[in-house]
Length: 398
Ligand code: FEO
Image (tube, rainbow, N blue to C red):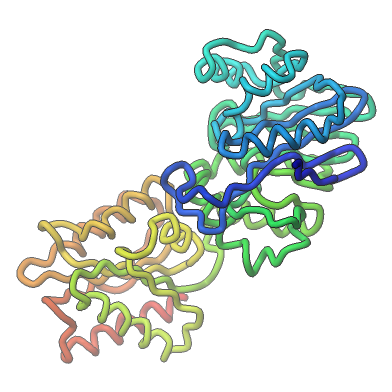
């Protein structure tokens, strides 16, 4: 049975959600699932915008068939070649051999790499090219490295709809409500949207900024992304979030504490600091055990907050592994422009503070507040004053 939904009088949602997949890209936990969005435009010509992940293939093909209702498929627009949207291209063309694939030269090359040959009916487009389908004119705009090199977006100049590829997407399966204004997006979706963006596209802030500048020149009434809800209201708010994230600016004036603690002593000091910060009026403090929190969440939280406390045991004469992994991940995602405080621990030779500082010095515009607090095994009563002084400095810098 199909599960299609109308978006406008001639645009139909034909995507599908997956709640079985544990790890998106085999790395990011998605307890709320994920949707693979795809759209059919029924104009004088029938157009399918992107396919979907192989895992939802059965539902996707039922949806396409129902949306076309016996019509032939004239065009498949491929905005993005990552397999979560492109895996079904070959199968689709076997079912609809009359369809012309409209895509970039780079994507055409990738089709050959994935499937062994380029489509027999291929229309290569570049920046500014258009395709008239009858009432609608689709304009193609390139979005290289958001987050693959072949990415393009398709703008329906008639109905002012942007098919934005991965941009403005989010983790989270759809439950019937297709539009962002039909769900509690800020309360229930924003954390996943941030985690999706930062971890998947966050490295490419400059390229996202270029796309946002292009988007600012368009009259956009609706955004149809490849994941998550469709946006038809409050677009400026969501675009603004992406502007902040891609500029590497903190989203919230807030403190996030991340600790890597083997037996709990580093944890105890980190949480004591949290209490001292609260006593100085700091609200909304979040603390995370790096051993028990997925790195994708830690990275997203470090992007959200203006201030981050990193507390780590020394391990193998280095940084405790979960904290070391976090620092590598933050560096890979170009984390920058934050204020950081450091706590290190080591029973006989504390090293992690010096090593964490060395990693942070390789990042851009990270300012370290206060001196590194060094624990030898555990926080000592005589160090309470030092910890309080660190809390004073963090609170003053907020
Ligand atoms: Fe959702 Fe880059 O694929």
